[in-house]
Length: 180
Image (cartoon, rainbow, N blue to C red; front, side, top):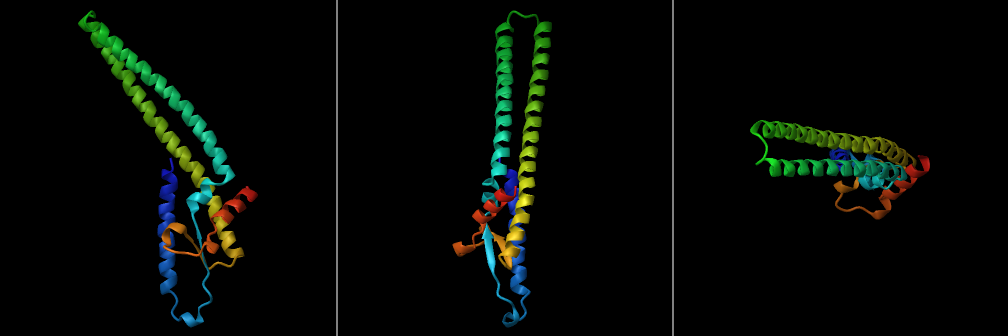
């Protein structure tokens, strides 16, 4: 369910790596460079711990569960229809059997299309929810970086080691919650 978050985070990670490399090579003479202050954030954690994401995801999950139950009922009905056809196949005329099989195949294809459509719809909705909050979170992180005078803020996953005092994840989530 976090595929859209993961894809967005992959992009963010690549972008952060680019920034690190760029900042390292862009300093011609370190003695003239200002003090570099780097912060880190676990953007996925920051987004998924916001009150807005939790609220929207709970509503999304409820809709998803209801649809999942409807799909399970439809699937059970299809299974029953297949069982009935198998039981009746010996006593049905070839024409009636063929007609019932065609109807069953048509219903099975419609069911499969419905499931595929719902999966796509839910994936799109999940991506939209996450993307909307992620855009707001990036603005929050940018503002935090400016106000706390950070040179850059990187995704936590790109760092091997960093001082916990520059982990802005919790601060970003709290700031987001207070502003939204």
